[in-house]
Amino acid sequence: LLTIILTAIRAQAQQTNNDLLPLLLKKNLITQAEADSIRASGQSQEKTGIKSRGKLWGVVYTDVIYKAHADSAKRGNLQYSAQPKDSSGLDFRRIFLGYNFDISDRFSSEFILAHETPADVLQSGNRAVFVKAANIRWKNIFPGADLVAGLASTPAVFFASEKINGGSNLWTYRSVERSIADQRKLASSSDAGLLLQGHIGNKGNFGYNFMAANGSGTKPEGDKFKKLYGEVYGKFFNQHLVIDLYSDFERSKLTPYQQSKALFKALIGWQTERFTLGAEALQQLQQNASIYTEGNVVNPGSPGSHKDTVQAVAFGLSFFAKWNLLPGKLAVFARYDYFNPDTRFSKNNFYSASYSGNTVQRFITAGIDYSPAKNVHLIPNIWCNQYEASSDAYNKVHDRSLLQKDYDFVYRLTIYYVLR
Image (tube, rainbow, N blue to C red; front, side, top):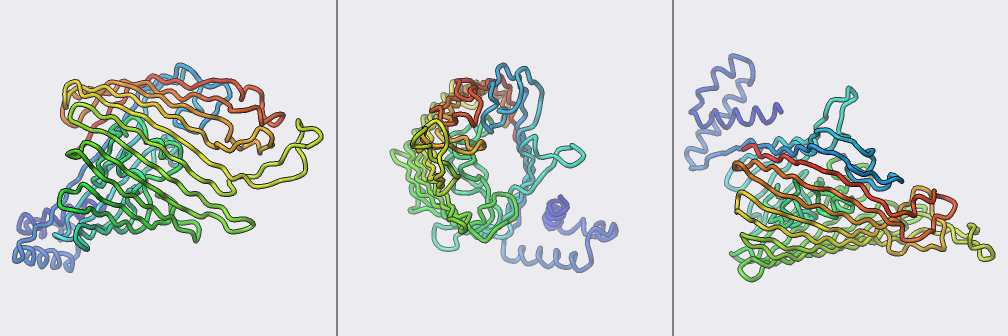
């Protein structure tokens, strides 16, 4: 916060011919050397015609919820999965405080503090914040391309749901729910590394995003492995049709056996001023994801002696639509997801109690988006996640209730507003 304030003061001091500098010096907020640097920078920019610009902004997602039904087996790891029936309350799903600063005509920076889940709390129980983004952008490092260094949005969400770094998102309701890959924790929306963003041609109809990063999200790096991201996209028919192809790869272990994940994702959408239709498909190959025991040959109802690692394949489909009834004022939207955490799950094997690969899930959300003023949205919506076991492979390891169909259902009013 102090960095943001001092940067803003520095910019303001330059823009007001250094009228604030004597006061800042008197209050010991800056040193004499810093004041001299500000004066020199301002004089240099006046000579070159370059003006530094900074913008402070914020985003808030607030939810008023009532959970009308809860899964009897308490399955899933989504936002409301563990909450009991009749839960209610008001909470903040996202709070952003961001500052963007144009250092020069070739360099800009971004800094975001965030509080994103009820689990982000201090030891005192108060809400905690963390660094969501902190990066510097070298514009036009070569024709049509920018290089971003630091903690930034990944290519996984460029067209999916985020729009922090200028992404042309199709699922415009990140305020309601993450995109399927982010929601199911198959991809990270932020990571620390080097990101190359570029477009081909003057119209920007074709582009790419490549990133080499830690693979630890917003957390510090904890191992020696790195994650590689890649994305290419094209816009057709006056940019109404968007096709986006994405992949990432990360290794997480070498001994006693190799462990890695590779995600492949494709998105297609048609977008006009009145409506948006989109579909997203993904598949993640999970090498040696877990360990299972083969069934006994003589007595298939009991585990045998042979153990091996699981080569899991997660698969998901997402369909969404938005219709602007009154552009800028009133819209309706809906989304349906299908997610299978392991298409190779076998009923003949015995898995560990923590493995949830046999539970197919279906997610549904729909709502009305009313905007009474610019940058203010009132969004009454429903949130539902359904569970269905694909087989009885757990046998005696799990309770029989896990084989039943059940669901979590939440009524919700989302209040979304932007401060800028």
